[in-house]
Image 1 (spheres, rainbow, N blue to C red):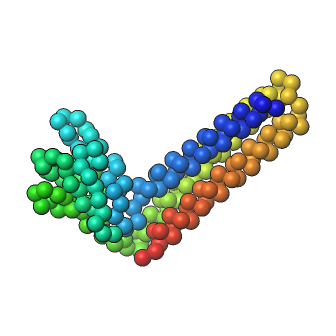
Image 2 (spheres, one colour; image 1 turned 45 degrees about the vertical axis):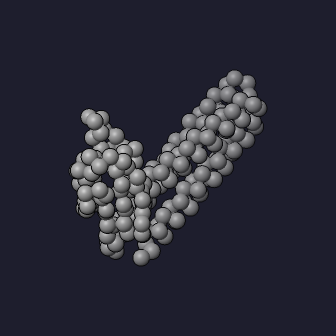
Image 3 (cartoon, rainbow, N blue to C red; image 1 turned 45 degrees about the horizontal axis):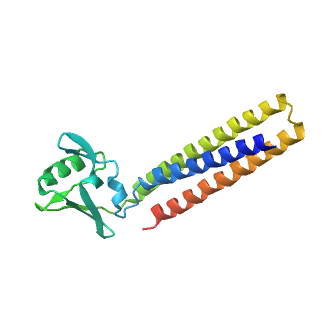
Length: 186
């Protein structure tokens, strides 16, 4: 029935967004390699307005352990340095008057294990979101039975929802494996 298909399509879309959100959260967890996305949460006071760092400077990675920040206005060097120090990232920026360099220290074994736990927790949040979507979709499909949809169609719909749930949960498991490997590789 087409109502069930609409619910399935919506569930598929929402579960896809849950996987995307999990991936974006995992990108914020650094693996000891320099990545411009590490500074995504840093905001700089730009003429009185908090502005994302990537809108006032270019951020490059000249090598695997260094971030190079080139402000578009030289007057912002001090402001950018202050914003990075005040962020909870734990970076020690080095200012040469025109650019800012951040050296990313290698991770200790304990820190790697902490980060893997953090990744696992983030992935579990993603799976909880998927299970919540499954529950809401199944509830919506069951309501259709009260409106005259046959029990067989409702059961088929619930089976399809479970297949989607398994598919997207497996995607999150794959994302976890990749991130865990990335973190544990020295």
